[in-house]
Image (cartoon, rainbow, N blue to C red):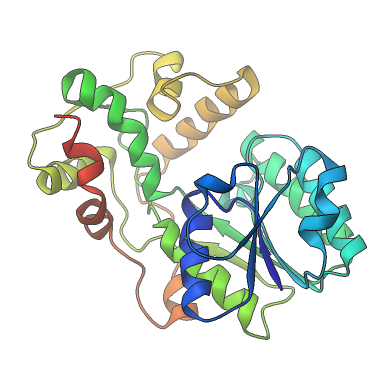
Length: 282
């Protein structure tokens, strides 16, 4: 039995679909079963409430572990439940920010989670993706407000990755032998500025988009979290944006191609598939 946490998120939904297609026996850990996609078994549990976890982990031998936010509590509870249940393999989603030297705050949080997973003694595969293409959905409030996009990283470049590609690598690691003890840094293959991304999205939705540089740290945070973010996360975002501005070449890897035998999906592909989510804002 394979248990998916974060099952209603961008990666979790794609992973559920991929594993369903392979006839893998899957269970979803969810707080709200109505939000989960697909046909797998759902067990209502909460990683913040360890007493709810034994039923979700019962009979599980493989775990997809994704915990949001900035703390260690959920990861610690999941790892303890996995050990108690006899889980034999964890695929854990971390971040490429752990590679920073010096390591930024975002990287330290993910590094500490990785250490909790390693300390469990359960064989693990660590996935370290870069920025998600789905982060573009955070542009919708300003597109709706005035047809513009905030740019906190110009002239920096990065290689965004489609969560579907992260899910495809996770599915491979969870269902094929030989990935235990491995760490995979995952990015797309195209390095893009925000201006270039906005141009591609504009073509997909048939609407001209203005790109505006941010004028303050607060506006930079708004570009990623339109409703605001807790102070520690906001500070980490500002730090991360500064690092991205300095990277005018764009960090990227060929890991997706090596593992999957195909290139990662392009940003234009993602925009074409998700254009309807922006067109309704017009």
